[in-house]
Length: 92
Image (cartoon, rainbow, N blue to C red; front, side):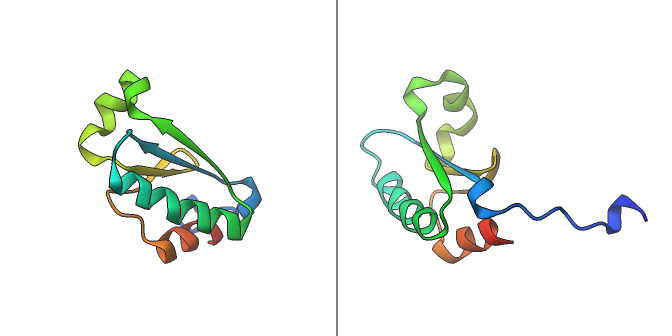
């Protein structure tokens, strides 16, 4: 079968990783963190926080999009985090 028609292998929520890229004093970052804590807590998903001021590469890549949410290293969203969209991304 062609790889185009193959489904992606499902990943269990416990094997996922959500990364919040944020900066100090950012109210949108605080809002995003609350959503991530709730969704990840409900699903048993690990998450981490990275400070854009501590990593020049993250700063260069994401400065205009803060906060940025990555799921398994791939950009999921930026600015505002939708709880249902994040939950779906972690369970599909």
